[in-house]
Length: 344
Ligand code: KG4
Ligand code: ZN
Image 1 (cartoon, rainbow, N blue to C red):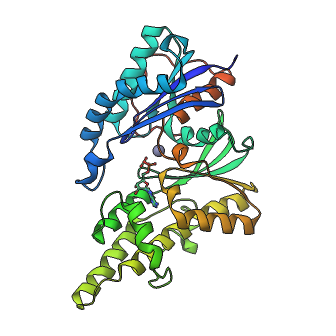
Image 2: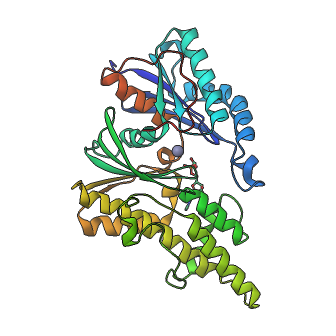
Image 3: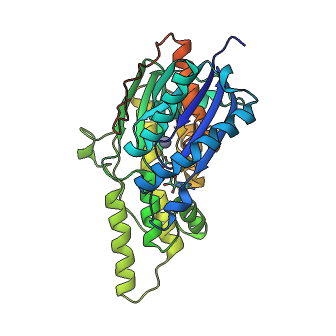
């Protein structure tokens, strides 16, 4: 009861997420997505996302309050994602959060989206308390980041990130190449089921010995995407039907292999036997499978929060703010804006 009741607003991409927590207890997590509106463009259109947030926010807040059985004036604090993400989309959430905080006269916490993804795991009621330090791998349509978390509120270090496409983006683009609909992740997962993951030796980006100096923990998926494009073109030019299942399985294997190899390399190198996964790509069945097998073999404890907490959501933003309050962090002043490249 003494724990703060926090409402979190997340609008960094195409999900309008409103979450309410009391301390580490999740009370509601409502999500409205504009995914379908982006489908015909094959990716998220910033302008469309911002408009959709504006329309979805009010009803989403009402739904979250109803689900949590709390009223606005019971809230102790408001939290919002201030970055990284799409600037226009972020601004809609920030505007709403400021209005709410000012009208209710409550403190407002501007929080980092990536750190929020890590905080999501705290809200998993079925898991034991999270232990630090931990390595965290965040993979979604917007980011692919490897982090070393020594303390959630004071010490999160970015070890590496993608230098081009995000992992989910690569799934979406390759799906498109194969004539599969958006979002591509689930489609590739399905198409790969009957495929041979060793059929085509697609490249593992930034995995050469010469990459280990500067890019040991960075990722690159654009070369992989190009390799898939070249392979399918060659097949078509030769008049051969593209073996979609094998291409999907081999592509997925290349992505999963490089993600898990680098994450476990970080665990070994920093002597941290814990790995936390987050982001929408965690829905990938092969990723979960490979992570589970290899973490087990390496003696690394693996945490995979439920998918509803892995994809973008407001609960993780509220949850992170609750941790900041617990740690004594002062609230944000109202002057902050959207920072599309906000570092951790
Ligand atoms: O976290 P998320 O819902 O939204 C953000 O991008 O922030 O992640 C969506 C991304 C999309 O790129 C989608 O293709 C990918 O996650 N995704 C998957 C799977 N399900 C969703 N990627 C691979 N395998 C899946 N099963
Ligand atoms: Zn995200």
